Amino acid sequence: KAGVTQTPRYLIKTRGQQVTLSCSPISGHRSVSWYQQTPGQGLQFLFEYFSETQRNKGNFPGRFSGRQFSNSRSEMNVSTLELGDSALYLCASSLVPGGSVQPQHFGDGTRLSIL
Amino acid sequence: TQLLEQSPQFLSIQEGENLTVYCNSSSVFSSLQWYRQEPGEGPVLLVTVVTGGEVKKLKRLTFQFGDARKDSSLHITAAQPGDTGLYLCAGHGSGNTGKLIFGQGTTLQVKP
Image 1 (tube, rainbow over the protein chains, first blue to last red):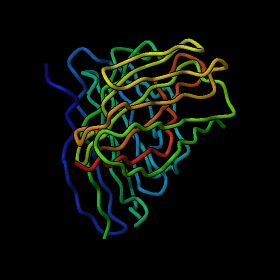
Image 2 (image 1 turned 180 degrees about the vertical axis):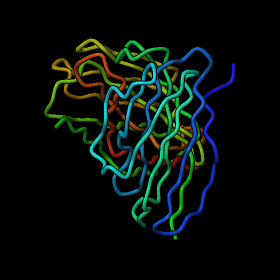
Image 3 (image 1 turned 45 degrees about the vertical axis):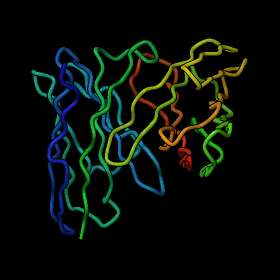
Image 4 (image 1 turned 180 degrees about the horizontal axis):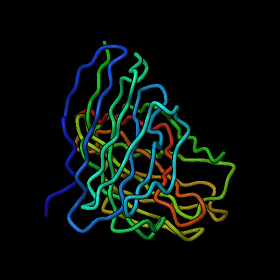
């Protein structure tokens, strides 16, 4: 069974540009969450999507946005990139949103570097 | 705001030693999860504890959830170099949400 697939694995951008990251959940999983991981802040929740609807949003500026498609694949977009956006962006999927009863499976992330 | 504090942040020990990692909060969590992350990879779920006072064992790893569901611990017996990695605790808040609140993580290095 294929795991969560995130593309691309590595990305280098410059300040002011925008970027789109992609996440394909495990087959059959309909809930997708995104997290940002940095050495200073650790793992921080960005958004959660289910059935193409955003159910939760973390405390990030409006430059961070996302969406989910009918096949459950999800994308996140960051506009007007800043140096502080350099991070590992992780996607996690679960069958449905279900708190503790629904284990989340993480992808290996997209490493975004801003020059 | 629900926060999780993990300690210690870094741990470097010799093979065969025992260790405990702590995860504490002033808030009640409906459950706590422990993950292990290796460089270049995403976190992998080790265990979920749901009931206050619950103890779960996974080979040489023992996980405990506090009676008040505000804290948890991970104890590793006879650590091996293969245990090296970043250990993360994470909690689900209330409600039917997939949102996880993570601790800062404990970087464990086990030297042969």
